[in-house]
Length: 120
Image (tube, rainbow, N blue to C red; front, side, top):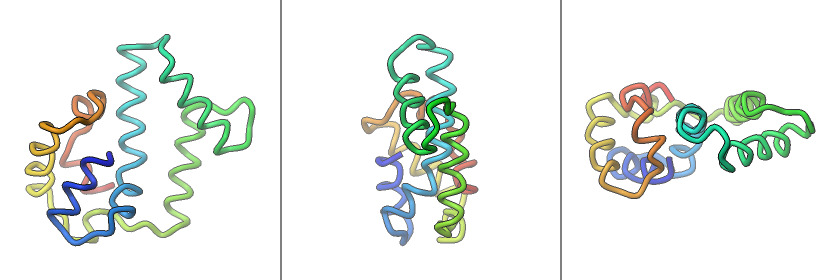
């Protein structure tokens, strides 16, 4: 997410934090999906659950509840969609190709459909 936000920021005029916020939920969803497939008993999913508990303040919070908290917070903060900054699908394809050569989580590279990120 962070690396892709940097590439997007080099493509369009967007504050880095806004790009990160716009990509955050999609990145979490893609990474969790990949982790559930590849490492269902790994520590990473447990860390996502811990973050969900910290964010929601609930000791029984699930990853999905943490994702809802993030989605609602991003919405309440008024974070604009990437398309509102002028990002178009062709630019996302170019950005994702550049990103693929950088150090980014494999789960994000293999499961995030780049053109869908414009809706982020």
